[in-house]
Amino acid sequence: MICRTEAVVLKAMPFRDSSLIVTLFTRDFGKFSALAKGARGPKSRMASSLMPMCIVEAVFYRKESRDLQLLTQCDVSQPLKLLGADIGKIATGMAVVELTDRVTRGTEESRSLFGHVVGTLAAIDTATKNTRNALYFFELRLLDVLGFRCDYGRCPQCGIPLDTDLTNGMLLEVMAGILCPACAERGVGFRQTSPAALRALQYFQNVKEVQGALNLSMSVALEEEVAGLLRRALQRHVEGLDHLKSEEVFAAILPN
Ligand SMILES: [Zn+2]
Image 1 (tube, helix red, strand yellow):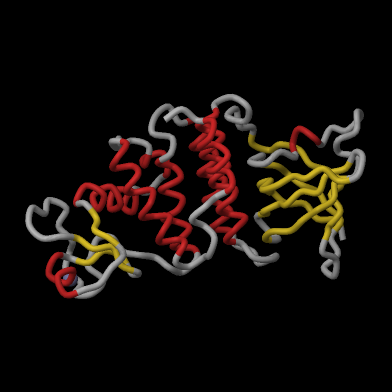
Image 2 (cartoon, helix red, strand yellow):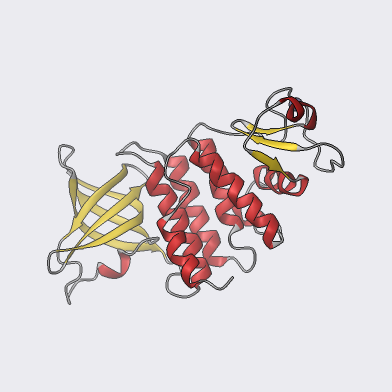
């Protein structure tokens, strides 16, 4: 059956002399791999739309019993200028794409996740400041979509609203969120959380649109704390997320 869907390219690998095997995360058919015959050939128009992060309209010949679908046509539907332009943006976009690849299994459809991936890539593309905030916003939505939402507004143990102006006592990172000072005293957690990091988490959780997330400026130390906390939250549910391949690659070339 010939099918058409919007998709994000997660991976592309050369296959034989002139073909590509791509992993697509689609709006209507979940994630699958597809063969793009001759895509790297001189006459192919597909190659430029088959790079990771591309948002495309894909036409493919679908056979459910097959592991590898056959891609017959692919055109960029939402051009992103960040591809090949700004290395910081590429690194952030690649982290979004890699996280998506790691958390999705098979062809289960997830339109809300698809919407978040496309929205986040578009926001990274047009961001003029605090680009990586789009990734933190995305990671929080990813926890929601996976069913592991943490409410950073309240203590998961006693339910009281968490105070971000806290001067006494400590906040403690736990599986289900962040413990208030009273519960933290009696609790066991992963590590202490600063009130500023809690404030940032609440900001990212409450802001409606990814563009709004870009308005928060954080110091390098605070950003490191927030980034680590979010990644640990994901890692507790999906193994292997503490080290993204793309982040290792970009850490080596990005200036500090
Ligand atoms: Zn509490």
